[in-house]
Image (tube, each protein chain N blue to C red):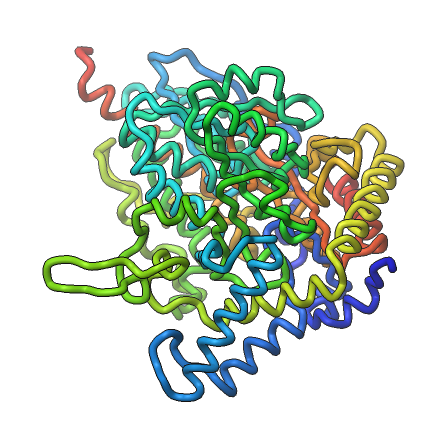
Length: 179
Length: 409
């Protein structure tokens, strides 16, 4: 039976108590995207400044539980300064990490899972695709324990889904802007 | 005689188990209650002895099945103080009961510019059906506000109700526990020519329900919050109103005659019960009514007041300003539903840590997002009591909060 220590790892609590990149960015040039977890009322706001196909800056707002907040904080640290393609690869890699439970339900074997599926999140240009196997998740792997608490997976992925939406919107905006 | 919790607990096998190595402490009855052996046995007995579809067969077990299904309706009618069984419509739950009113009465009587008065503390079930009518046909929605104690603000009731065709409100808030003065609101509403719809989901499990004394026109409650099974609830309404209302869902059971060019609706109450109904569930609901009446609703309510008082006092005593309990501070003016904020620990995290020691509480917006915004929170943790809870359960909750504090501070 999974224990609380699997869920509330020290690094997660650190990001929860001292969230990185909290705040706002002026819009425009940044885009502002909101994400909701209809189950619990959590909301995440991502301010995303994308220029030259790179995440120049991002800020996180909103409110939520320790898992959603720490996941958002770690995400902000992981993708800030990255190219859009790298950021999308990180999203794919993280969502693979979070989908282990579903793959187990499907009967897939535990070891082979981490690089499968999730190809849908990758589209939309932004330079050459980066294979997610090349992504180093680092601290984010601390969130792996969340998959043993299925109800909380949505908490962990909320900010990532919001970021994916933000990247789409930022790229659409740059595609249509005169500059 | 006061309620004997130890004796009551023996009827609930589910409460006699360990979760994560700890005695289960079930504090989520406002979401759904547990079921006593009497209810489970009644349903099992039906399936094992006389189950058949109702109102169709002429053979013995079909007749018995029909008799038991209709007997459940008779029990419910008496439980609500209804004038006749023709006023008792079985629905899936309160959500369906309110939707039935919105789809039939609402779509007959409400058009552009017509107003409905609701409250800020409504469950989404008493908001969304009316918001749908607003979107579809431009009805106007007005709202009674909620004050800092979680009470409805009734100062402007007379102005707000002016020109309104329906007032819809909950009797007991599923978030704040507030017991609303429905009879008073109904008096003012009726004087202004409005009908009154009451959401009794959190009331009927804990109080003696007398629809006539409440003065309402529509009343909904659900079985699964009052020891019965899921999948069955009830809409009560005055017979004359139900007669005027068009049918809701069309299909079997609700018809008297069907031709290729039209149909004639069945009489009340079957007019609103299309398709094969939840038969065993109705029988389970009847058994739940019997069980509650054997204990006595006065004792059920007295126990709730006593336990709520103990919880309010002991939680404040132990946790001081670290805990903020929403809703009225007087246990007589509220149900046993305690939503709270603890330090700045998110309700999801509180619920998770409590689960580790077997304490089951709800965390979230409780299907009342407008009220959450009004309270200035995204979510709350909520403990709710029923007749199988005791002071030891409150103490387990209180101690578990201290461990949450240790983990997150």
